[in-house]
Length: 108
Image (cartoon, rainbow, N blue to C red; front, side):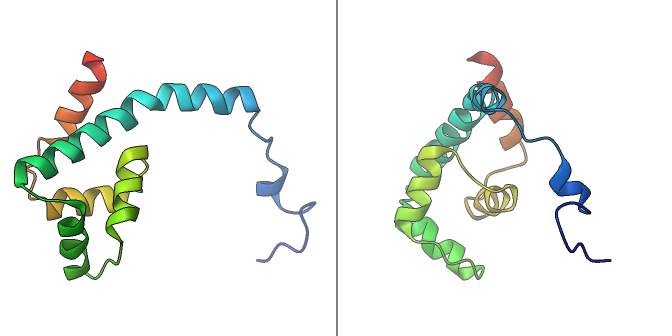
C-alpha cells in the first residue's frame, strides 16, 4: 500500500506537537540526558579511555564514529538506544548501568 498524498496518509494528518509541549518534553528529559552524560564520561575515565579509544573500539564492531562526534553526542546526552547499548558493551559495563543511571535521575 502506498500513500500518494498527505490527504490519504493518516500519519501526515496526525496533529503536530506544539512548541510548548516540545519545550516541556525537553525539560522532562534533561535529567536523563545529564545522567547518561555523567555515566559515560565517568565510565571512560574509570577505564582510562578517551573518546579516541572509544572510537577505535566501536570501529572494531564495524561502527564508524569520530572521537569528536562521540564527544558531542556525550556532551548532549543524545544517543540512539542502539548506540548507547553498543557503548555500554564496548566499555564492558555490567548490567547495572541502567539502574545506576536511573538512580542518578531520581537523586537529582
